[in-house]
Amino acid sequence: MTMHLVGPALSLNGKRKGRVKFRNADEARKARDLDASWKELQKKWDVDLEEKRRRRALKAEPLIYKLNTPEDRSTRHIPSVSTPGHSTATVHKVYTGTKVKGIATMHKSNAVPVFSNEEAVEISRMRRG
Image (cartoon, rainbow, N blue to C red; front, side, top):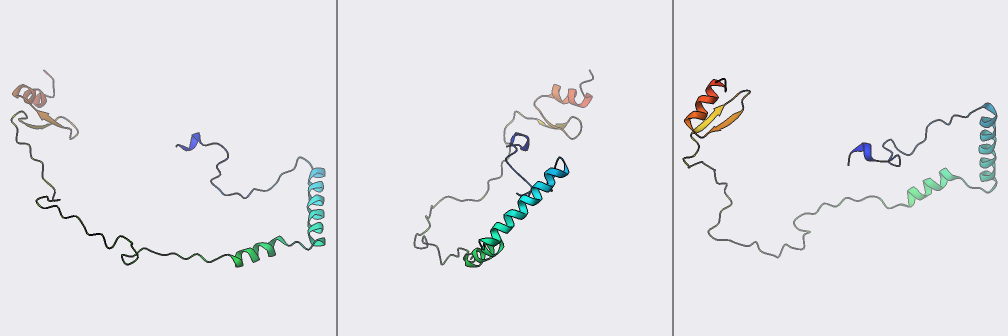
């Protein structure tokens, strides 16, 4: 999906909001007062969000990365299938037919197959007639 089809809900720069701008000084003062009263209420009820976050982080289990090694696999007892007479070696493809007489270069390193003598003459003249 291309980025121009994604809606505004997708944020590529995190969840932090920028600086809040107010229409006027009165609204800014009201917001500061409201924030101060909220912090006083938290202090009154002994709620410290930073302390809560720190405790929760310390209680979390540490991340342990475990790599699977051949000793850990449960399929170690299954033998590989042996297929006699078959090989996985690559086979080189070589043209053995008689239809194509050769390969010509038109322009800008463009390889073109040549099927007849007339085509070879046209390619050599660059189709100028």
